[in-house]
Amino acid sequence: MTLTLLQCQYLLTSLVFLVAVVTDLRTERIPNGLVIFSLVSGILLNLLFEGWNGALSSLAGALVAGAILILFYAKKVLGAGDVKLMIGIGAILGPYMVFWNLCFGIIAGGFTTMGFALFRVGWYGVLASLKRYYQCLITRTYFKPSPYEAAGLRVPYAPALAIGWLVIMLTPTNLPGL
Image (cartoon, rainbow, N blue to C red; front, side, top):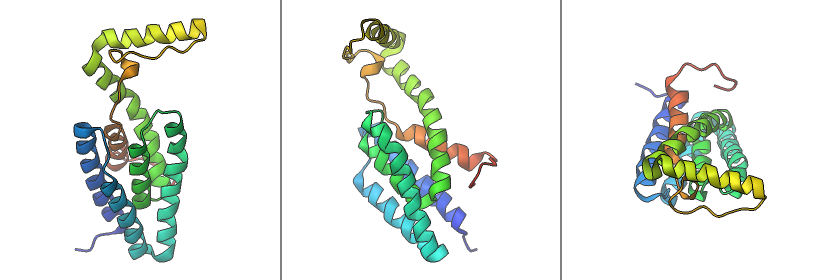
């Protein structure tokens, strides 16, 4: 049985996300070795199947992921590990698939972040954040969140990005580039 490029991309991306989710949940870090592995293997995989056009597509995927997520990193919404992870995933998937992975992953992030917040600080912590945001808005002054409210939490984001990947992989989508 011969695997196609798409099947290899699905397998490799799933493997990388599996390792990333487990390590992010345990340590709140994405290993640089995993990022380098995904970047190099993505370029080599696409080069092997599609030649230099595949390598260029791989680099374009890494660039798309980096260009989109650097804005989230600059606003401290995402950590550097999440950005680097998606650059590696972009090298595997190419520009179109990584774009849609990011779209679905960001949507999933709203739900996973709320779930983590409720699990870690409960409704009280979520309400405390909402009250603080209201005070910031009224007084036009920023108040730093306490560690006991939702806004003060560090939330692992690899699970949300992996959910975005599951949406692409498991649902019949008819989106441009897929």
